Length: 635
Ligand code: NFS
Ligand code: SF4
Image (tube, rainbow, N blue to C red):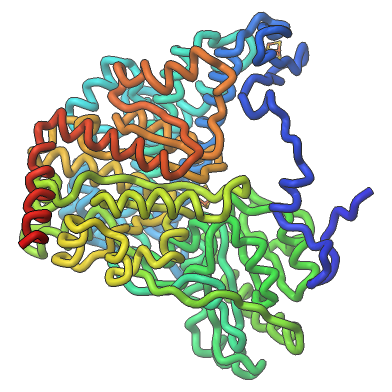
């Protein structure tokens, strides 16, 4: 029997996800194609992809039904993860309004009032707390709403909204759509893949235009709309002579408080007494993105760095909250001095210390964690620390609001200049490149190939999640160095505005910012009257999470051409695959594609963008611009 737990540092037996992946080989082909079902006890059933063995499960379900049900379940899980995060933010806002959450405050009254007005609330005669309470309760009700439709859907262009209505996929309430998705996938319920996919759209829309959008909006109210700021990324953001705390996971609720606690003079003093120069915080995954966007806290890395961060030997404490946290962390940390602390009662890990976080005690708990880290710093003495690579500068903190402001200026903040540059051809189109790392792909290589190829071809790239961290590490978020990768047209625009060619919009729930920005571009005019008219495309080159599938589905249902790499979970259902890759475009205007080669992936996105430009009648403008440049060069 092989050793299941890594042995002390430096030993060849320390296993990380790549070794565990190797041990899993060969992985199940049925699972990869999505054609196994264990939804009832007459199974598990599997369909023979070669057509020789069984083509039906015991209940008679065929390959399309089985893959469609599995896909819908992925959407439901992804949507619930994002949305439960949104719910937690709404609950916090309510507690802040009731003064039950000391430590928190409403940082952005402007956004609160703007949101309240949009909701039709009357802010006059109300205190900030009273208004926050109303907005928080409104948000909470969006989750449990039984009838009607989610409010933020009306942020979409009218044509899109009408299409959703016509197709009957307007989400009623966030929780309701997730529950219905699970119900439909129960044995013997929905057994028609089109029907299952329409629920996939409805459930995914309740994520993108519902739970995720609520998370983003209310986090902006509580913690402030992100503003562009400079920060750093890589192993080197951990310091040999400071207490190093890593925050990892997704919600900013706890990490915001850790940031506050780490700046308190008495705790800094305590750290100094222990011989440290100070207290240093760095992030991993989306929690990292949240506090980067609002405080400039440096990024340690993305999903595939969570284990290697520990193996640097420099981490005194890693506080995790929810989602994308590997169960291996405590065992790896046991080989070092690192302490792993879980903080959410939704996410416990054997071997980790648990410090229960609540909004009421958040600041206190954050201080406790910082104290534990300081205490643990002493254990690091004399042990080797290895911080490879070098620090890379980045600019992050873009939001729908700041993009409009940067482009249009303080007094006439607008998307007009962006639209004009797209119409005029300097910017060929806009792409959202998002999502995870997957240890089946060389770390970050998928993201970087796609992003570099796009900016080289004058496509402005918007990013979130682990994908944004990948680009940060490669210098693409540097407004000066990033320009080296740009085509001439994009370069001119970025230089004029002073932005990098790759804009970091935040965590994965902040993909909702991309939806809002895209709707604003449509509203600005000149590029069609629906999201599906825009010269835009989406991609997740290294996806692994069910959340990514939910995001992909709401992009497609919002009219966006969306390409995923690595693998695609329904390939064993031939009709379903054909539907998602082709036919669905006739209904939704967007469609899925699968392309594991990142260079080809970028090619597909560019081809789609060019097709859209042609349909809009703006393909000639670009030719003219390029011709001009060639002529200029000749001169
Ligand atoms: Ni998104 Fe963020 Fe990263 Fe993937 Fe996980 S951290 S919410 S799921 S792995 S991008
Ligand atoms: Fe097999 Fe049907 Fe049961 Fe799935 S639901 S395990 S296909 S019998």
